[in-house]
Structure formats: C-alpha cells, structure tokens
Image (cartoon, rainbow, N blue to C red; front, top):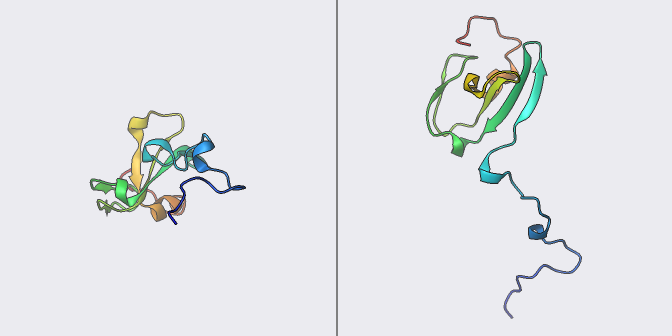
Length: 102
C-alpha cells in the first residue's frame, strides 16, 4: 500500500505551526552577550556559510573557508565593526593578554 503524506492523528503537522523549523534564509539567530569588555551581538556561522578566509583577532590566525566560527560586533556599534572569531578564541577573549589585531 502506498505511503500517505497526511499527518497521523495526534501528531501536529509542522507545516501548520506558522513558525519555521530553522531561521529564514538559513541565517543563524543573533544572541546578545555581556562581558567585561562590553555588550556584544554574536552570530554563529556554520561551516557551510563560510566562503572566504578571515583573520581571527583573538589568535591572529586565519579562519579557513568552510570552518564554523562566530561573528561579533559591539551592541551599540554599527555592523561594519563586526569581526570573525574562532569559537574557542571568542570564549577565551577575557583570558588572553592584549595585543591582538582587535
């Protein structure tokens, strides 16, 4: 017997929720983070979303294309101030000594 595409009774149809399963356009949601260095807006970039190389201000190393990482910018500043960070470098930014490219 052929498979039915109708949802089974008792299970909600995800198409009827009105809310997409993932963010529109494939862009990850932006979150707000506070730290000793101020308030930041942070957005994860999946490996498939990274199409060019960037320089991480935390370690001054290259973030290769196709590598998952983070983009951050000051909460009260323009988006043009955004920087691409390795995820681990962003998490350790408070423990690193000054002198990076930031």
